[in-house]
View 1 (cartoon, rainbow, N blue to C red):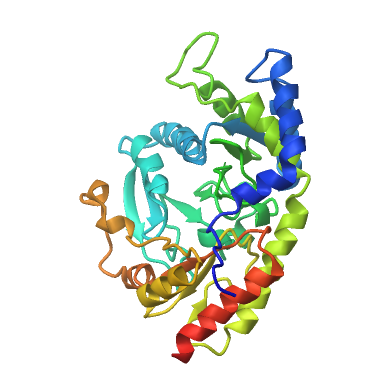
View 2 (view 1 turned 135 degrees about the horizontal axis):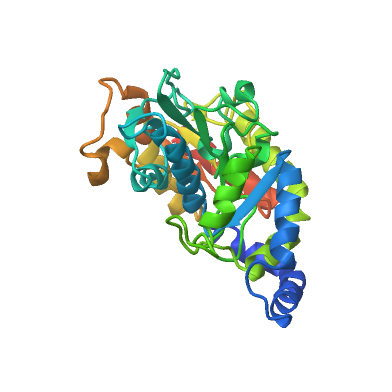
Length: 356
């Protein structure tokens, strides 16, 4: 099969499939003249809280903003008790937005190492918050146990929220970035929580604490247009998730005898936002796939501890596993619009790499 070109993301294919519905939603969201905070926002927030099995959902402009709002709310609680800035532990291997959210909120950040799947390894200690990140779509082991109200745990659910099953800790941040399993047509994010005080704070924060402006806030509302498009896509999310799981299961089986490790091949619930393999020859496989028309990507080539913004952060002596992963992880294209022929072709080209 020569001349094949498989993009890393399937947004063009998704639009082709949903074009008529998305265009109609665009007209419906614009014609009444209320571009934020209207019917579509309320309808999508209602859908979201039911999907996540939580009492409350608040849409905002991005997943990063959602996490920052949760962090700011928890800091206000902490400041009532402690005079020094709150401390939070985050994984050394994640997207830098996680770090940025806590730095903007005024936290002292500690970088923690991960296990071999990229999930934070750090026992909760008195007075220290913990941010769980569902890297690549895997639900963190600890999230099974924390339930829906745990005080000391905040959750960056940008990649795995579809598998959270009501376990949202103090609050969970969600991203509807165009690369996510459920995507807006621009930016978008949300907070889901069972904490009424966090819910009310987020509702006010996203609108500059109108009408009295009693606290510092910002304008971070999601548009009616994006909420209308999310409602269209939400109708298909179960079907799309089943397809992602089908592809991941097939590849895990195909690759089980190869000298690589599939990070989604574990017993935890997994949203399969990415399909990531780990191998020592990552760069060579990356090149081999690109030559054969398969657009793989590296998530993430650098750990947070390597970034300029992290130069003054506290880092435990041993961050070895997260550093090792960053040097060997490779993401294959993963989206429900992949055809069976393409799924087979990708597997064949991975096999071919090791047959050389």
